[in-house]
Image (cartoon, helix red, strand yellow):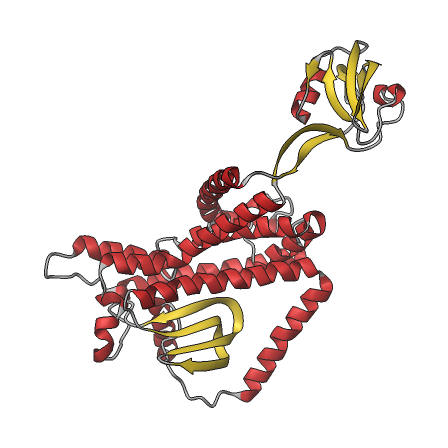
Length: 415
């Protein structure tokens, strides 16, 4: 039991497996079974919903780039990295290149890069001490530990920019389009309004958004005669319409059509940079709030016992996100999947900077604390062992979130 705890503790404080360069004779049975399961999952996703597979592949690439951020910055700042693995748990496959072991592990729950000497509990060979993470300057340590989350920001920015320039940004088009056939016996039907007509004016007032269109209708009185200009096949048509009574409230004027004015609108690269940056900041702000919502035990409990709980407050997993990605892909195609992937990257980047171990933010907080406590020629090293109990509680909470999230994603998929 003590050996298990020591291994658990070491992996928390080191940020991954601490056993470097293991015996090359891997368990072939584990490798074969694990590989077949992973391949089978990928094939099943491809057949079940290709868009779900696209989203999952995007997540895998994002996780890889996160760890690549840690790996490249560590190497460039003189630190020693000994492992670069996709997944956790038992090794399925690995190869040695120089001092680094690259490979794949059985549990596709993330990835990690092993950097030696992360803190005072992370033992390393004396000859490696000059290249240990803890031996580097504060700016170098902060760069390396935040590189993963920064990479998520870069990914999101690139995805937002790419979609906005190629497919467009979901925004007002300037056209109020009639989305479906007018309601039976409604003023719109009686006056000849048709599907895909574009409403341009109401009583001389130009309307370019659905909100303006609705405001113009409800500002009138039932029975009032109005002049409506619609565009059909590129030609303006003026209609005289007597408004009726709204079936839900007879005191409100009624027209009788469903309309919409939002769609993907392409923007030039310069505007795309501005919009991408703006949406990145807004999404990051919402993600900060979302972290506290997700980690709130009351929300976790309510999500399980209350069938009418707010979906925005429930924990989620890759399973639920992938299901949502598949549905969005069927509706909006690749652009929708990429935008969802961008938002997920922002949330993961923010979540990962939560200032507690085992998150990267915990390591950044320790480095910052050590910087403030250090004096010239007398560096201070925090005793990470005192933080292990709190880190264990965090891991327990994450496990609870995973179990509850999986349960909800399977029993109550988000639609």
